[in-house]
Image (cartoon, rainbow, N blue to C red; front, side):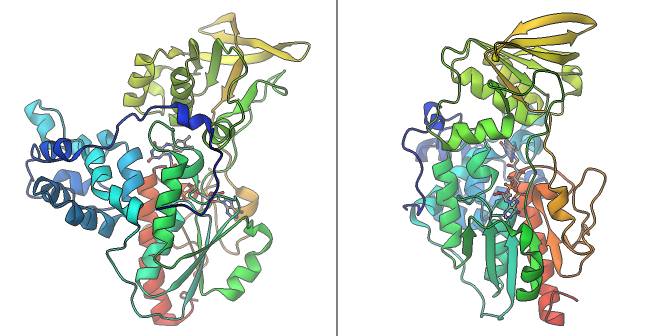
Length: 435
Ligand SMILES: Cc1cc2nc3c(=O)[nH]c(=O)nc-3n(C[C@H](O)[C@H](O)[C@H](O)COP(=O)(O)OP(=O)(O)OC[C@H]3O[C@@H](n4cnc5c(N)ncnc54)[C@H](O)[C@@H]3O)c2cc1C
């Protein structure tokens, strides 16, 4: 299936090899046949999107790839991207009982991807929308949360319209995920396949100044704006070439043909200890930067990033400097030379050709405060009702990274579905989103 978007042909993301290539039929069937198809399968219980894991794997083993896709997509319309990016070892595969028998766990995410790959190539939907209800819902942001919500609303007979401020839809699937997990082109193919059920996506529209109009023109609103921009590091010398926020750098790497690294980059520093910092460090290492050092203020045990990602980073040659804080960025005539670092009570100097700052992302506080009766917690995340995803405003729902909870694609999908089902109940009962 072709995508109605133009991407530069020479994107840097194309320099990466896939971490987990698509299974062949034989590989998928062999892997599926290792599954014990547990009664009361723990993998199904640990999938935030509620996919019937044992059932779809059994269908693969029975050579019914079509049926397997139907099972996955019935619960998770972003099943393909989840198959590429889900940290299954901490979710479904992490609870696989084979672990108790000291056997390798089932590669659930890879089987997921295998099952759903055809949906991206032919965009054929398994399910048809219910009779139109005439209710219109506006969704803000075209990331996984809004896409999953819009798809569910469409199936339930409503008319979803997504507003996305960037020129490309897909959210972080298109701009942020590590390119060795999924390319921007595949992310956009998935968006296009979902859109074809009859979802309108208006790109290049920042809704900041149109919130009143949205509430007037639509029966309900879903906020799926994700996280905000990179948090800035406040140290002397920070402004200038060679220092860049992680989200901005990864987006450039994925979507642009501009060089992602200064010429002859030998040394890179990544500041932070979360999954985004780990991704940036692994991307630098995979691009061939000889020395990549993560500068982290605590110890490896206290890192918020996943342990398996840290292990993979170390295998790829990434060095972790613990108990370390950058105190100054050093430049000579404006050119980046490195950073002074306080590490385990010693002052050291680390040379660097590029420094990537990955110390978190600010939330869209100013934007979110414009929505009437929407309340935020101390982390500037939208407070929602756990059962419904509804905010303090009865006509406004939210989900994904803009709300508390796991910051994962599969969680955003689960949140989007939850909100769509709750909106459906309210829209049909009251005619106006519960107001
Ligand atoms: C670097 C990085 C790597 C990651 N890797 C993984 C991974 O491997 N596996 C995994 O499961 N998760 C990963 N995640 C997390 C995952 O990407 C998110 O949890 C998921 O994308 C959240 O979906 P969302 O729809 O809430 O937000 P997003 O994907 O962020 O989408 C929000 C959309 O809203 C748009 N928007 C914002 N403001 C406005 C506005 N005013 N008007 C209109 N549109 C607006 C944005 O442009 C964006 O397109 C990663 C995140 C990052 C940052």
